[in-house]
Image 1 (spheres, rainbow, N blue to C red):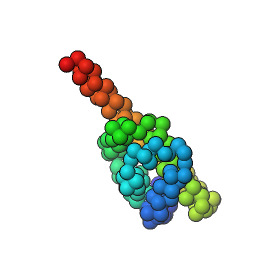
Image 2: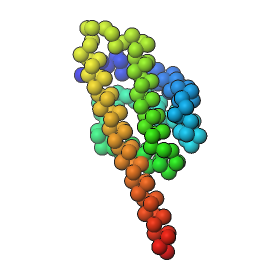
Image 3: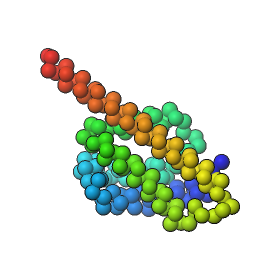
Image 4: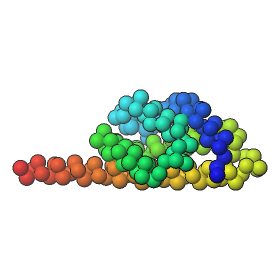
Length: 156
């Protein structure tokens, strides 16, 4: 089992993490498209949901829960006209921002809890990999549906 104290620390700092991520995205040129097409409060809610409920996402949520949530998000970003590369950049920034927080807190350096920390890191990698996979499925599904709709409109 991964280090519970690390997850609790992340969850306690969810507001600051979400605000910091928003700042990081504002300062990155690769995020400008996303920021123009997705309301800031929506981005903040999404990141806050991950950070605030990280323990649930890693321990009690099933792959089906992640699939349902992130297929929907992928479809939403496609409808909003966000390029897939901009979407991927934002998800990776969410993960990187979390790593930077843990490094700043000095929590990835204590040898006594190294195994628990490695377990947490592994669980986070799996979670974010599934987020990206299922969001890409939703994104592609939305693109196919729009393509089919356009195709049928031309036929009619």
